[in-house]
Amino acid sequence: MPGKQPIGMSRRGVIRRTGLALAGVSASARTVPSGSASAAEAGPSRPAMEQGAPVTDHPYGVPSVFEKSVVRISGGKLPFPTAAHMLTPLQDLQGILTPNGLHYIRDHGGTPSIDPDRHRLLVHGMVDRPLSFGMDDLMRFPSVSRLHFLECSGNTPLYKSGKPDWSVQMTHGLLSCAEWTGVRLADVLAEAGVKPGAAWMLAEGADAALLTRSIPVTKALDDAMLAYAQNGERLRPEQGYPLRLLLPGYEGNTNIKWLRRLKLGDQPFETREETSRYSTLMPNGIARQFNFTMEVKSVITRPSPGYGPKQPGFCEITGLAWTGRGRIVRVEVSTDNGATWKDAKLQEPVLSKCLTRFRLPWVRDGGPAMLQSRATDETGAVQPTRESLLATRGRNYVYHYNAITTWRMDPSGETTLAL
Ligand SMILES: Nc1nc2c(c(=O)[nH]1)N[C@H]1C(S)=C(S)[C@@H](COP(=O)(O)O)O[C@H]1N2
Ligand SMILES: [Mo]
Image (cartoon, rainbow, N blue to C red; front, side, top):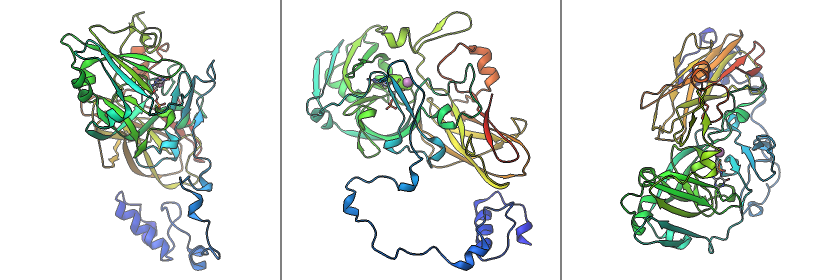
């Protein structure tokens, strides 16, 4: 009986089995993502008996009313109401792109409302010609579009502890990915002429937080962008409309939104965000500063806490992997707490400093399981275990948590965070 065969690891196998189920051949519901033969006899769902809603009601579309639960959630109350974070629902997303309305948000002083016609960017300091650019000026430069992830370095706050019922949205939701369009920063800096000896660039936002960071000029001249669009449309206000700095692979905080000023200098500017914040204390009492690059990391987005499979049998394990150092070359998945590993399939495209989707077909036998994913990037860096990360950084560390995450699944399919 075909229905008794163990499910094939190939996609064709899954399709073949599903096809059999549709043809009314009774397939074991325990091993196949099958349809229902009795429902098949009743035929397809009824067509609409009257005209649908007029499309002219939606000059700008919104998701189906049945997708109301797919929303950002707050990452918890911060002491000041406009210093807030909203988390991306990774468990509900497919592929690698984050829809603009679901991009994570981290604001230190609320979202300003900026008229693009009045917005200006000043480039000054150690340059041959200080220049001020309007949005029209910047949009006359040759444009580029590139897919990159953005991750807050405070994402995955698990150094001290975590709650078993934290969803992947809570643990990893300060992570999003978009196709960003803008201007190469190197092109704009060439107009101003960077003076020899200029090694650092101050970037400043026009929000009430006046967020400022020092960026190495080498990064500014490498792959940095002045972005004005995300996923085909102009930036959302929350993402920095009308202009943000995009530093692929660098910690989210350095990607200054509502960008108003770039100042070149020969030393870092030692702003608040790089002295008291975004630097952290090592166990030996020394603080790490200018910790820019987001290290190799991955997480299983389904199944995940609150989103476990309802029945045993076939269950695709899928998730995301990323690294600020380039491309992901490998993702391994374990269902037995790291005792054995299998290579997951990486979904094309696999791009540099971008989310990579991985998938592994799995047949759950109904026993307990401990699900983990472990990513490797093109520099050979392998995602560390929680134990090894804590051993080097200690529990007082705050940022850049990139350890392997474990989801505990009990026989009923209920899934929780395990630390
Ligand atoms: N001007 C300004 N830029 C900013 C911030 C801010 O509060 N003000 N927040 C930073 C932080 S901490 C992060 S993680 C990212 C978040 O970008 P997003 O809100 O578009 O996801 O923007 C960074 N750029
Ligand atoms: Mo952040």
